[in-house]
Image (cartoon, rainbow, N blue to C red; front, side, top):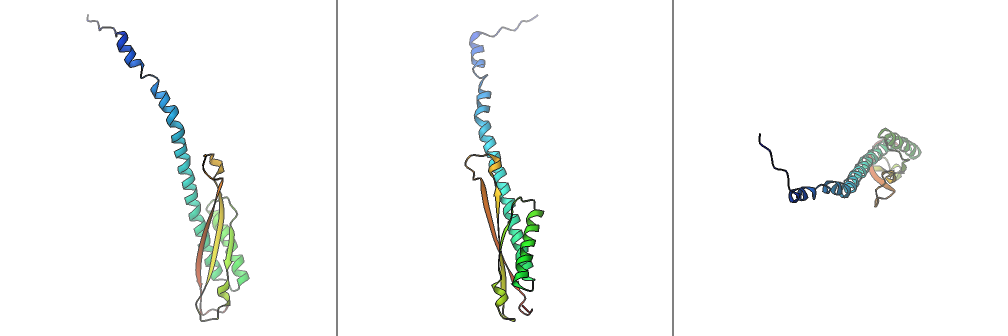
Length: 151
């Protein structure tokens, strides 16, 4: 029967010096990996919210352009923007401004209506240092008025 030689103290010292490095690396890298992960979440949340605000501005301008009066244009635009924001799952109250100057242009001349939608998205719940507590997103969309429709 063959016996393997027992490891010497020098051999044990070389292998034992590497034993705690994995734990130290984990302690150093874990916060970095977590910060990168939270930053990706913040970027994704901001990007999705920017798309939702742009869609809300587009819908608001379109609804304002088919309204018959400036007052109706404002109310339809606000309702449309609120509905678009809620359907996209954003938890913010949109601020909608509608430029209805195109309604004063004479029939037959080209005119437009524009809608500006602003929404503040919360980032404070992520708890990442260096991120602002909230980011305000803004989108503007312009839609043409029918030049031959009575205003």
